[in-house]
Image 1 (tube, helix red, strand yellow):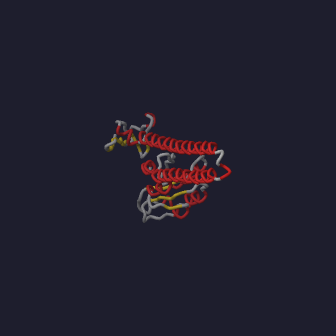
Image 2 (cartoon, rainbow, N blue to C red):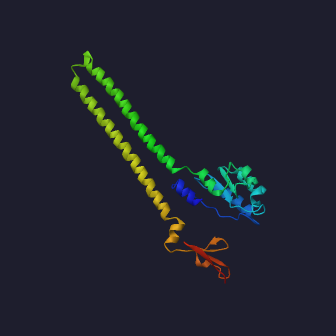
Image 3 (cartoon, rainbow, N blue to C red):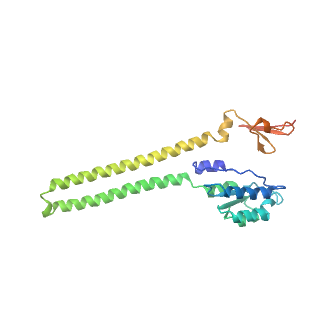
Amino acid sequence: MISVASRRYPLAEIVLYPSKVQGEGAAAEIAAGIKTLNQLPDIDVIIIGRGGGSLEDLWAFNEEIVAIAVFNSKIPVISAVGHEIDFTISDFAADLRAPTPSAAMELATPDKDKIFAFINEFSYNSTANICDIAGNYKDTLKRINNSYGFRSPFDLIRNKTQFLDNLIFRIQSSTDIFFSEKNNSLKLLTKIIENNDISTQLKKGFALVSQNGKIITRSLNYDKGTESTIRFFDGEIKIKL
C-alpha cells in the first residue's frame, strides 16, 4: 500500500494504526483503531483491511463491533479485506469496498501523472486564452486607431499597445515560473519520500528486528526467550533461542 501511494501521490501522508486482524481480540482492536483515527485531525480516509485467508481468518471483520465502528465513522472508510472473491460485513458497512488493500490505496489517492497533465493543459490553455484575448484587444485598438477621430493621437495608442504586449509577456513568464517551481517542489518531496522508504534504509545496511509480528525499536523491549526475525534488504532470518 505504501509503494502504491508513493507511486501515485508522493505527497500523501499515511498514518498506520496496528491491530490484530484475526484471532481473539482482533475485532475490538480494529474497532478501537477506527474510533481513534476519527479523533485525529486531517484524516481524509480510513482503509481497513488485510490479506486473504479462510472464513475463520477473516471473521473479525464480520463482528458487530467492527460493523458499528465502520458505520459510525465520520471519516469515509474503504474496506479491503482479503481477496476479490472475499466478502465481509465490513464491506457492506463501509463507504466503499476494494478487492485488495493495494486496490484500496489506488482508490484513495489521486494519480500524480494526471495532476501534472492537468497542470500542463491548464497552463497551455491559459496562455492560449490570454493570447486570444490580447489579440482581440489588439485588433480593436487597430480599428480605433485607424478611425477618423483617433488619427491624431496615434502615438498614444501605439504606446498603449506596447504596454499591453509587455503585460502579456510578464503574465506568460510568471505563469511558467510558477508551475516550474511547483513541479520542482513536487520532485523534491518525491525524492525525500523515496529516500525515507524502508527499502532504501535496508539497502544501506540497516536491519529490522521483530518479535511476534512487532518491530523492536528499543533493547528493553527485546525478549530473549522469544523467536526473533531479522529482516535485511535481500531477505530475512529467524533466530530461535
